[in-house]
Length: 320
Length: 261
Image (cartoon, rainbow over all chains, first blue to last red; front, side):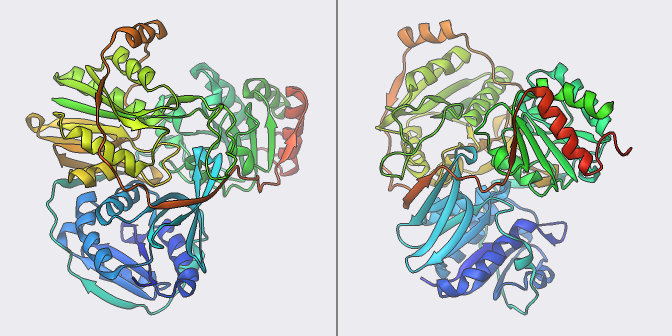
């Protein structure tokens, strides 16, 4: 076993994604304590040029082959298993993304390495790695260790600063030919969201609604408030799933990341997936009927109340 | 085509969660349980796919003593599943690695083309059951999927895998395969409580042994209810008073009636 900390790099459209930088920064900070190096593992086709974007790593393993031109769970799995098996890193860090879930759990099962999911903190002390994981929609945290001292971690986006992983440097570049994959999962296309009527990432005031809105007819109430404030309406995932607002208005992990001047979270409990998309807002005001709703842990101001009572009163007040 | 759905119950988050005396788990004495939300989406997708092409839906849940697995499986039948099977016997909900091993063992004796399960659950500390199961069975797997469609005379499936920013990857996988379902195209159908109660008395819930597993390999040192690090200032009073205060906070920042857009 080495003390190396592997970071599986995610990239799209020729750019490394922020969650990879977050993990790389953490790996770099912990490498000394772990007794090894921060190693970025970059899979793709013709991606050698991207390795320079991973300067915060001490070493970049470039796994390059035509079968890796796009993400595929089976191709990534086939390529990564022999590398992790051979090099025995102390930790493998993976973003808790759509592709990261596939990669991390697949490696865990194939290599019999334990997996700590939904990590929000990671340290290495005298007893080895220690991971803080978020469970039960953020209502419980678990501090865990790996029985054998080594393991895989999937981390929630936004848990570590990305800046630390963007440092420039001159890592050792090592190129590896990927193991053959069976092609049972075939990438077809990357579909991008259609432009909506409103770009919520550019709005400075967002009035955001979640399940607490109760009924579709009540959307009018928040639209009136948004109009009175000169802002736009956004939502948490359930509202988009129900079709009450277009998908382009969805804030969160699988929606959009927003940083408005003011974010009103109305009837949004604040699942980790939602917080990922809006915790950077300058001002967060939450109204929720559940006093234990995790949204109150990121809000600057909170009120335990039914949004259907507060919103009309607020609209009248600011619109007057 | 034969669809298999893997389901479980999880603690109801509407209730307050408390930590046990050891400080390493949930206090289970007062917990109430509900079906895992994403597993319900998986079931709904399986039912829609079967209704469109014909075939069967078999639901598997672990035989866990906490909560009520029989009710969960009877609800599956009430919604339209063809067959339900209770797998293994566990004092409480096992970790995902153990669950995957148990499901893999049971699936050895079941005919299936596509296995659907929830992409995640609120308690899967050691990862998600779908990809763990797929690796054990050496089946193709895709997580975080929507838009499931069967093609090629039932030989392949296409799905959308969700990424950040609303970007979606479209994939085709050979069957049999395992999918981690993010959401269903329709809201999970309603099962009348009276029908569920009746089925709990009359329906056949089959049982299957669960294969052994080595466990998660994780050592939980502590579980805690996070102390809010927030400095959130709580606003109290009537809805009117709350609205007044929010309006004032916004006005301080030049938002609202004070400044036009």
